[in-house]
Length: 415
Image 1 (spheres, one colour):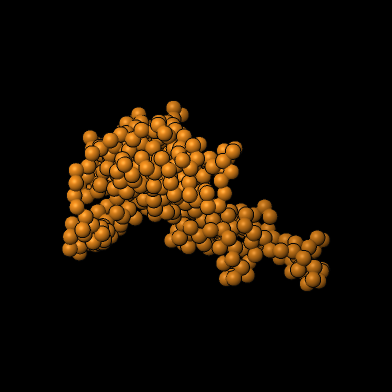
Image 2 (cartoon, rainbow, N blue to C red; image 1 turned 90 degrees about the vertical axis):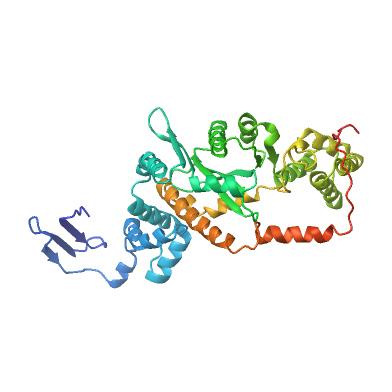
């Protein structure tokens, strides 16, 4: 009580007990001298047991600081469990959370201060890796607003070794100031994850998505790419304005979820069990159809099954998700799986301050690309083993097929 760096006064927790100790430093030195000590207790040991020792989360934070530095995903519940097992100290969830926050502040400093270093970090990235795009924006008051980063090595790899298709998605940051992490992810020659660019913004607003997509456009230059997203309304307008709506492919999983919601909410349909599964199969057949003839047959089956479902299909942009109707190559990539893989790939970095996020992403990407380089040098063919396996299976399935000219026709939604 009333303690400082040079003065200490301690008293017994039990009321009216005379036990007391007073101590202080000698002059300007660090030598501590006990000035008064009354070593007398006027109560029983049982009285003491009613009082829990005061444990400060700031002090506990120093104990777990190294563990949190090594493992950012060290969650408060685990902290509580470890303190109970290792130190016989019981702390609740809120105390554990404060312990972690004190440890993070001891490691990185105050979270708001890390944003002040973003301009310096962007400049250093551009200087150390020429061709890297690293830019940021701020508000009129000078507060951080947006960050975009795409490394030259990623840009070059996408140009020479990836298909012209990008999966774009967002995930939430879990640090002190929250925010959203936007990512643009490509597919390597083995259909694996290829991180191209990321951004830190306030949220999934029209302004943030438009700014991010404009920077992605700068990264890929004049190359025509297919953009696959989850049909977020801000993304639909942003992709249309930056790349053109013909480039926009919609994730079939999210479309199927909306289709199921429509079946559940549409009065009069009353589809249950096998009937609902049949409707989903028809939608899949429309999406995966290889020819206009196959697509027309699937549409006719849907119309015969339920006219309302056919109307829903025709009103929900099948040219953005059906193979036959989509104008650009898509290589059967129907989902935003790569974007979701990227969100999991940076799971730990999403917990950190923005400077540690940038540094952690760079370290992870460097190790990732180096490992990929070592793997590709062992490949006997220009494509990876997964792609090679698919090619062999399709070659076997094609034995005995004959080739004939294919007449392309537009699919009419008039049944």
